[in-house]
Image (spheres, rainbow, N blue to C red):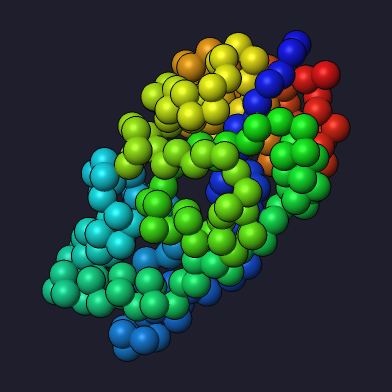
Length: 223
């Protein structure tokens, strides 16, 4: 196929936090002076219950942690305090490239217009891009849930390609989420490249290309 542009997801595709979220949450409990009320996996599992389009991540986290506190028999102010401590502990710029991601990015930016299509708060995602040194190197960044609806809605991809001036059928999108990235790319009529993360199950939806690491993206599997 002929490719004229490449779009990347950000979290768990190009980068990851250098400090695990479990460590940040433990430090937040210690700051507030309470025993751990929930695990970070509980936070991730229920995060979607508290998301409102356009809200920043700090508001979402406060609603989530307040609910956990109330469910533990504590005042919701305790939950808000834990959320504030989590924000204080979390350095959004302290991110690192996934293996092969920096090489893949450098090769793509040498050959194509490159954009980022990410679900996330611009306040948070912009700091990650700055931490990676990419904040002024991509031609467009679209934040699902803020600039457009969340992926897998096609609109974030439409907005990115309008900015790039590239046709959908001449674009690939690289991402790690079947639900957001692969489904979203297909909804927009874009070729999908799925970073599978060592999954043993059959993907649904089925991506156009499946790679085990970002090293393979550097070799342009669509060629």
